[in-house]
Amino acid sequence: MAYFLKKTNNKKGTYLQIYESYYDPQRKGGAHRSYKPIGYVHELMDSGIDDPISHFQVEVDELNQKANAKKAADKNKTISDESPEKYLGYFPFKNVNDSLRTKKYLDIMQTATDFRFNVYDMMSSLIYSRIVHPCSKSKTYDDVLPKLFETADFSLNQIYSGLAYLGMEYEKVIEIYNHQINLKYKFDTSHTYFDCTNFYFEIDREDDFRKKGPSKEKRHDPIVGLGLLLDANQIPIGMKLYPGNESEKPVMRDVIDGLKLRNNITGRTIQVADKGLNCGNNIMHALKNGDGYIFSKSVKMLSETEKVWVLLPNDYRTVKNNTGDVLYMIKECVDDFDYEFVDKNSHKRTVKLTEKRVVTYNPTLAKKQLYEINRLVDKAHSLKASQAKKSEYGECAKFVNFISTDKKGKETEGKVKVTMNEEAIENARKLAGYNLLVTSELKMSDQEIYKAYHNLWRIEESFRIMKSELDARPVYLQKEETITGHFLICYLAVLLTRLLQFKILKNEFCSEDIFTFVRDFRVAKISDRKYMNLARNSIFIKNLASKTMLPITSYFLTNSDIQKMLSHRF
Image (cartoon, rainbow, N blue to C red; front, side, top):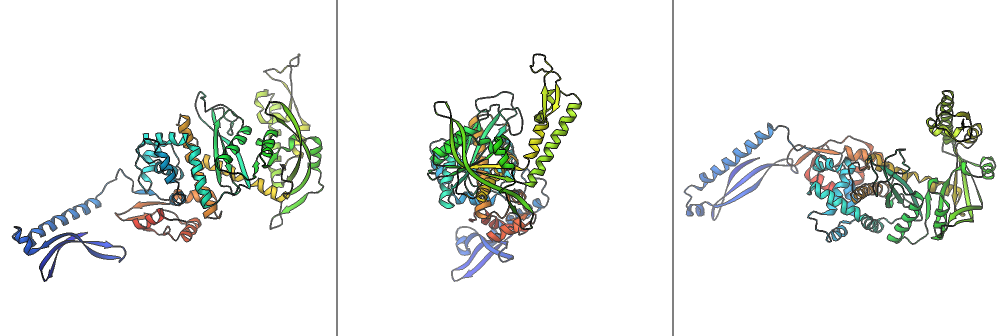
């Protein structure tokens, strides 16, 4: 950039201006523009300046000296405290988030607080930070937020205050998002998928929220439970947090009732869940509300008559893939089955329900389960040979009999006599590869039931995204409302991921492809108006460039290019 004194002669006289030269990327060459208008020479002389041209040439020379000094300083610039690298891969999530127009409602909510920062902006920044680089809140504040392309204007204390507020109001926030999603995309609640997981905390003592219970990671630390509900297209509808010592089975009823009421879901839905949530009370609750159910049921827990039906080769149909390989075998029946449940007066009742049952045999699953059974049997044999204590057997204890050496027939803490339980081993091997589904939907075909249930893996994938991709376990947070606010951020990150994956990219790419792009798409500043694209080439980035017509595959990017990405609408 250089400055010069421009002299323009016209009828009134000679007009002076200071002009600057600069590089115009549109023309791909040099251009000039007015930097400072000065005035007519004769008017300047009348104001007391004897030689205006010489006078203002001195100012031009000073401007050029400063520009040259800055240019020289830039050449010798040492390592800066601020990294030139910026995260930009979050822009598709920002596009989706902005398009939902939830900000206006959250801004109205915020009027009831005395916050001096915008809650929506803070929440959105935390969502994008969690997506590009999940870490603690203090590390997010120090290392991640400054590297987002858009600046964040709030302090660390404001983050904690905002999280606590969002935690207290998390159901309202989800309701706002659901309302806007329903306007834009429409939820499909003809089927709903529900499952629970939990997150452990490495703390010494329980509190009112973090309680000890059965952990998915087989740990003994206090845990918090999380229930997640998805619609038929695997889009999250809502979540519910509960203390870790509470049973998942009643949580399912509470969550579904609460979410249907809060989101005005009045139609009949078919609740799809794993065997851990299959119980008489959940089934009766679904039917009482006019809903249906598809639950998995343990084949091992069936009566002997039902096990005989499962194992009989009669009526099985073989389902193959395009190359002729057997995927699974399937058969169905409709009959009346007894269910036990506890009524509102805490009395046990038995009811007979007409139900369809669909059983499948999967040879790949059978091979995997047989391997695991044989591994446990071998372990039991080796422990038996070494005369190990009962407490050392763990999972393989189900394949052995422990005979107490106490003369009174009571168990002892020391060594006991161990024999292999051949009947249990034989039964386990017989049932390897079989899976049973029970449903109220008598008119649904076995294939439809099978497909509906096997979409449940999407909710397990959502949990996996939370636990691995988003590193959801809030190690350093202590207060219940702050922990809840943190999980809301993770939930909204999963929600935006699913909307991008299913509604915009039409399920053409898996979540791993999306997160690889998000974390790889970074830019480095090389001048005031230019950036270098650091992302590696991939099928995903080419597809996204084609879909959006944005220059995300270009090596050099301008401020204008990046602003187009951040303001893009799918």
